[in-house]
Amino acid sequence: MVHAAELLLPDNFAPNPLRSPWRGQLDLTYAHQNGETRPIHVKTQAPLRVQRPHYPEGRLICYSTVVHTAGGMVGGDELVQNIHLQPQSQALITTPAATKVYRSIGPICHQSTTIQLDLESYLEWFPQETIVFNAAKYYQQLRINLEPGAVALLWDITRFGRTARGECFDVGNWRSDVEVWQGRRPLLIDRQWLPGNSQILQSSHGLNGMPVVGTFALVGCDMSEELFLKMQNTLQQSDIPMTHVGLTRGLKGVICRYRGRSSQEARQGFVALWRVIRQFRGGKVPPLPRLWY
Figure 1: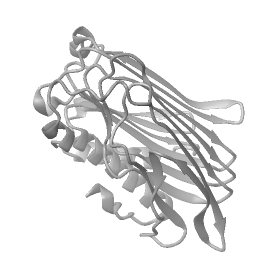
Figure 2 (figure 1 turned 180 degrees about the vertical axis):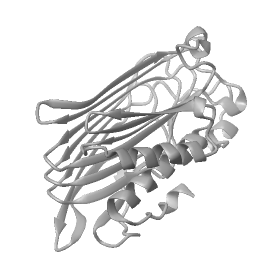
Figure 3 (figure 1 turned 45 degrees about the vertical axis):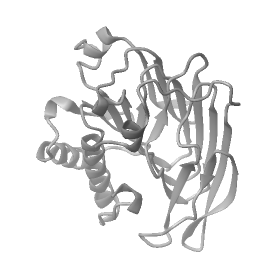
């Protein structure tokens, strides 16, 4: 898939270093009332905003889209998101397009997301891919706190360099910290760091020449043997080479890793797993959000 940024930006493109960094913020709270999940508190600060909620599956689960109106992040930008699902509420949160992280001549850009899932709430956190340009400096943090009975389903897909135009991530820095806790018990601690370096990119212990990595995780529920086998079979029957993907049981959940050449391939695999999980949990295959077409 070729993105607009890959086609329109020249090789020597760099955002204006003299402009003031963005300090975006999002505070979003959902509540379950009379069989319906709806946002009851929304507060945003540019460049973040939230589109109107929609309900392609009925009123039980609320679909929300978080928009970054600036089109991308540059050095010094900071985004802070605080999301709260009150008891028994259910939400799917996504983004309308890939997040672009442009090269920086100095400071890093930082995104911090904290999610609180109350008793028996359910969240699907499905942002579209992140494209990390060569010489970008990016640090993302995600912390999810689960109350008893709460479940989080999340994915993250990252492309290093605009590979459609031959760009590699030779210079820069990327770091990702993901934590999921239930009380004082850690269910998932996932820390990743990749400095821009051709040796690491090509090493079999690094990316092995692959520009795209992805993580899919279901956290907060006991993983049955039946569901795990269904997920394995789904990956085996897909078009994804099995050398590019792996599925592992975690503590109260499951983790799938992708390392390959196509962010579209990663998302197709993750979508297939999501639909298997949904069908297993609720008996129905969910429709694809309209923004993913």
